[in-house]
Image (tube, rainbow over all chains, first blue to last red; front, side):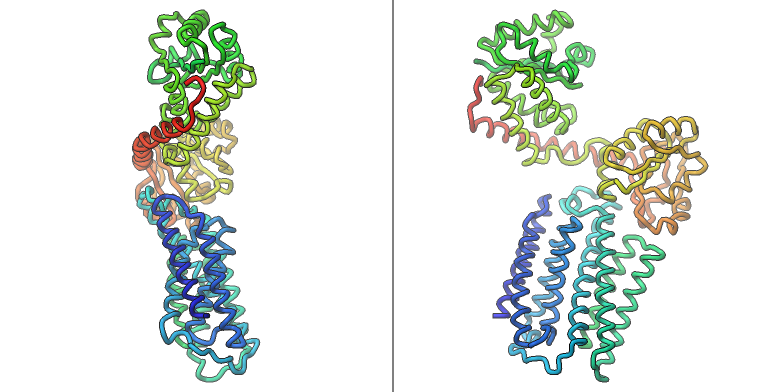
Length: 255
Length: 336
């Protein structure tokens, strides 16, 4: 059942993304993107609830669950942040990322067919895992906003202003404001996760994960510092956000 | 009862003729009432804009109504002979179709312009208030407004800016969103920069700085726009805070060079900066556009964009006409 919910959620994200892209191609913004993404979120809730019940803990017991949780946080942030900042087109860009993550999660071997309750669940560990993955959702969305900025920036710089995408992309300043807010949200959540990680019990085998996590945290802290105190051009900020997000995924290799 | 439209516009009459028949906004109702009192006319609406004056009438006999109107107008303006040479006349279904075309912006000098919709509404409201309309014209105008809205929403007849000034303003919106937080600097107090800056102000631009070689002229324009005049030697200091620069000096060489912008980048925290160069020769060195956060548009680029939008609107005409015909065919209007 849980697997079917994840499949349904992936299909909804695919339809929503394709619908949105086609609308943008025709020159108007799809009013249904938010509705599709709401459907995606509900299915993700169902999947995570079932897995959480089986695990008797936050469902982050295997890579498939981590990817599903990450997709859920992406969708959640889009629904909270997208419409609020009038950048609902973010959904059109978010949906493909959700489809990719959840499709990988559905590859045989990624999701445990019989999830067992997590032994020795610890509140610090749960907080660390949940806030870290939520942080990744915000940072992934920041990367999506970064891609949107780069597309718009290229079109404005090269004076190619006739595409449907150009007409529907939010203004440069709004994109940058959203990107910065998402980076701050991700940064605060990541810091919470890292602090929780200090207090959770861990053994010597986790050293690679710890080093990777601290490096990622330090890189984001540096980016936020430079962005706040020195300032960065929109293009450099976007490139750094996208590159750092992909780099940060390396942390999962050590889990 | 027959529906009738008599009028002249920018295509049929030069401005010296059009101005003879122009009716001020405050007199539209009164003018409609005067025509309504003519024995041969049952209902009347007068539309008058800078490019057209049109009389929509409902009458038992269109021939008698035309004769009455011509004699009424001849008494007020130029000779009837001059008037009839420039006037066009549409009857019944053709009059209804013409009004729909006017409301949709298809008959405007600037194809698809939106202002005409409001102007026709105002004219109709004035006639309604003056009591010069009844069943025929009320139904006609209400239907025309509905069709005009449909044409504008279902086609791209009003999409894209078709003048250099509007393109610049649209681009500013695409870069900064709402312009309430944007500051503008005008480099060179020429007419074009004044018009463009005014458009930006009408879209909410927060403050305007005007700099010019003649400080007196800068002060004049600044006062006119509620802005602040800046001495020409000090424009670089203002560059640090503004978001949009409109350049149109008469200088024979570039005024703004890459190093000028490079010097203020740190202080600006690398915020986006939009340069609108409408001067010939250009005021802004093209190398400025290579700076990452700078968006530079010169007069040729702006004109190309405006021209492309005009061509796109032209391509929409057939579709608009189809919608008008389809909608008019749905329901027979009285007098057609």
